[in-house]
Each structure stands twice: as C-alpha cells, then as structure tokens.
Length: 135
Image (cartoon, rainbow, N blue to C red):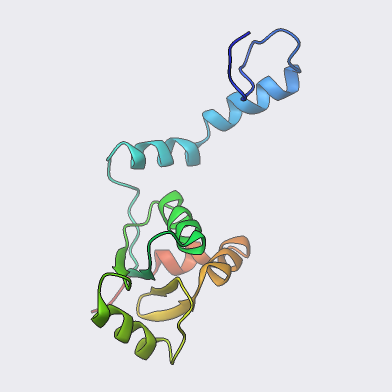
C-alpha cells in the first residue's frame, strides 16, 4: 500500500463508490479548468472587470482569490501591505471599510470573502462575472 494519506483508486479494500467518486471529480470540467489555470493556460473568458484588495498571509484573501481562480477569473490585485496609496483608495472606495479582502466587480463593491461566497452559493456570482464592463 502506498505511503499516502489520500485514497488511491484501485487500492484493495477501498469502497467502489469512493473510487467512482474520486474518478468523477478528477475528470470534472471545473477541475480540468482549475488544472489548466494552474499550468499557466488562459482561463475561460470572463467579461467583468474584477479588482481585489488584499494583504499577504490573510486566509480570507486566499479563500477569495482561490474562488476567483476556480471560476477562471483574471483579476487585478492591489496589495495594501505593499502599497499605501492602494490602502487609501480601498478605504475611500468602500466607504470606510478596512477589513480584507475587498472585492469589486465592474466597479460595484461586492464586499469581502463571505459576500463573494454567498453570491457564489446563490448563483449570482456567475451572472455578475458574465456582465460586460463598460469603460
């Protein structure tokens, strides 16, 4: 048996249903898109302009960026821990909010990672990302 904490398809004693579930997930379109993105290939096109204010080592920022990457979104990231002007701009654009991340889609303030996650669960995020940004 291999020295891995993860179940491997075909391992003796592994439930057939678990093996089928793992194989199905590995071949899902979402997983294939995510793998392509991580390999440096262009993500699927998103028409919206997405901006995110972050700082390093913030778990909430990492969650939000992961969800955006998973959706195939190319976004502009402003690191407020490295850019004082970005921090001032963020506070101004959000009406005083200082918690991170702060996300904008087509210049509309979405909020933080919990709001982004809620929009995703409700199916609204895909609609926002599909809207064309008019400069």
